[in-house]
Amino acid sequence: MKVNPKDISTIVILNKNKQGTKTIQIRTRHIARLKYYAMTLVAVLALLVGAIVLLQKNITQQDLEKQQLLTQIVSLKGQIPVALQQVSEKNSAQSYVQAIEGKLKNINDYLRKRGLKGFSTKSVGGDGNAEGAKLSDKEVYMAYNDYLTHLVNSVGFTPMGYPRISAMTSSFGFRSDPFNTAHAEFHPGIDFTGHRGDIAKVTANGRVVSAGWNGGYGNCVRVAHANGYETLYGHLSRITVSVGQKLSVGDKVGEVGSTGRSTGTHLHYEVRQNGKPVNPVKFLTLNN
Image 1: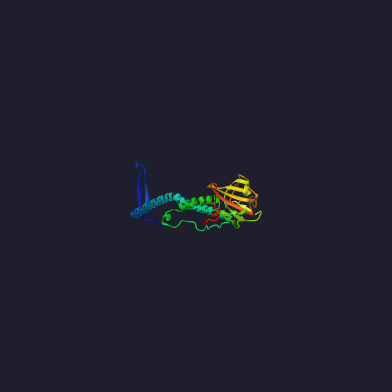
Image 2 (image 1 turned 60 degrees about the vertical axis):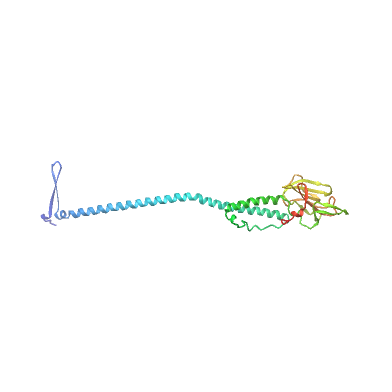
């Protein structure tokens, strides 16, 4: 295609040292449109600057949101020990409940070994009054735990219940002398019916302090318990424990017989406190 010389413009470029020149030929119409090219370039530059500013703004916003998230994370980390403490307290409360249930089971075992009916362990809690409502679960469970620890020890080491389950044939106190009905005598214990060889059981945790022949008691066992209590098992046909032996509730001490001053086969049972005989009937059930 042939270009008209009128459509061509020549641009002369001079060097600074004015040595030599260069010429560039471009179409004249491009020179007329130069301002439009310049405006287009400026517009592109403006768009680039705007995009950069917008991107910087977004970066700043993201940094701010990141900082807020970090602050929330730090706050949550600070709350974790509190939450763990609450979980720990809940677990502690549950462990107290388990400890209480264990102690109640021990008490019921003690009672059943003595021939006594146990009590329900379904309802464990306070009396529902205003002061009790102020206590935390942990404080309530601790109070019950302390109380039940004392109760376990009291039930475990206090003579309670029957050395054997049978009818009583003679009560505590004054009675006619079975060998001389014209006279009265003080009977320091109670008698239970039985057959030779029937088992006689200790009624509380303790230690054997005497095991052997004891005058009118015949073959006799004495067991020392807590709080100054002692129990005595007389007229045995056979003794199955020895002095110094430690016994638990329900352990066998001997077998029923009719040794010593006895008119027939039976078990003589005494409860003594600080060396003095007390009525064993008071210790047969929880209701006396």
